Image (cartoon, rainbow, N blue to C red; front, side, top):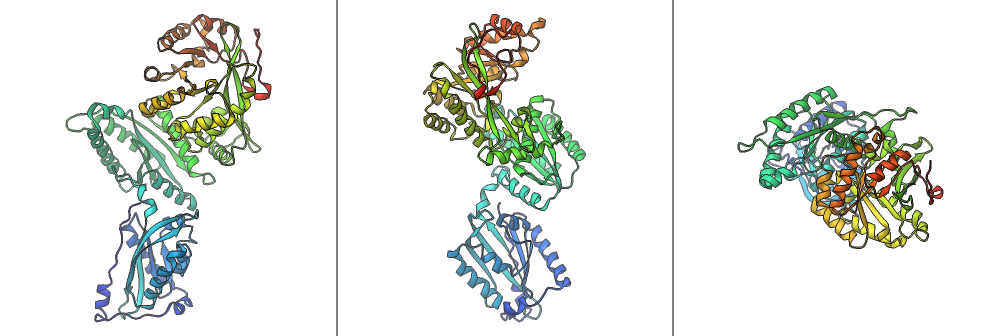
Length: 586
């Protein structure tokens, strides 16, 4: 948060008293008085005037005749203050200041209320609501009344701990600033709407025309967004070329109208130096109305809706609906409970395992670990209800590490009887973005004593969002110690082939969608055969998922499948029920 300081200079007030230093009552006398309603109204009007001029600062204004203050709601939320309206705010604030800095602050405030100092300009450390200290700069000045008495003390506090919340390229606050604002709204239970707007495949703009050109395009986008939402909310840049609007004035219908206008302006009319870059615009939106949840849970749902919009590729605004399940449970509340479970050492999560068998012999070759979650309130919740959303949440990094560790601990006992047993574990996009991902994998392999060559990490097409060189580095480092990689859901996305061409995957997993109607003589068999030949050309084998019948099994064998996974052999089961021997189920 960058601060714009308000310095209400006292020179004009001193002029009214002939240039003499003003005098005023001591604080003890002021404390005995209760502020009048008339003075409250004046204080509020002055405060709001100052606040307009300093949107990015913690503004405070004190009526010195009564030692009664108004502080910005952002400061109240960030530092855990009693409220926006406070008697003796200086004493309350002093309790938040680091013990080593309290004395100088105390002396400054005492001099100001004694009338011997006209203001202060100082730096100190202040404790936030989580108990962490941040460096603050506080500037303020005194205003006197016409008789030379202390009247008001006005100023602003700059929180240096939030300096990095502003994106330097756009001038918008970033995701940290967004969550500070959301915490304020949730704390006050203020309803509103939130919208995410982003540009797909923006990296191609940088690759074709260079980063300078890309930055000009971003500046054009920023200008369009500012024009479209002038005085209608606050804009943030959250990640790459993704922006968020937080509004308390626009309805969802109005947001949809604005989005359609934006889509047309950006995708058809944006021009830079005579060029019209081909920009793919995607958007999602949702209501802010459920305050029992963590704001991050809400934001994860917004991200999920955004990625769904990208996959649909129709350019329409995807509005997240907090629908009910068959037991009339709210999705948002369930997601919030999932997040709490993760934060509570992943309580409520269990792993199920589905066998992977050799196509020709039906010999057990490995298993895929699959996540399940349940709670006393909701029972067992289907994974497709929460996994696609929680994969967008920062807590999934913790959950992903738990999945890997628990899966290795569960299946290590199979290695003695089946030395070739390969454990398949899915990882999410958000995990691969972490600098610590490779070390996390190595650390857990070593802690459990699990052979790296018996681990296969499954990645999905969404990994294309990560810098390809970063992905290559991850694969190279882990493959060097024996870990294998599989490309999951191959063929269901529009860039699977591009990823296969750039990454050295060991296994290509063919999605169930190609198996469902394979007995009906559709083109699925030819597709699987072609994907087998393609994978073979890149040095990979194929595993066909979703095989449910003997007929499907025989067809995919003829298509060249090396391994098979599906209900035909076993549904996902707890580790204690995992089958290790297979005859023809039919």
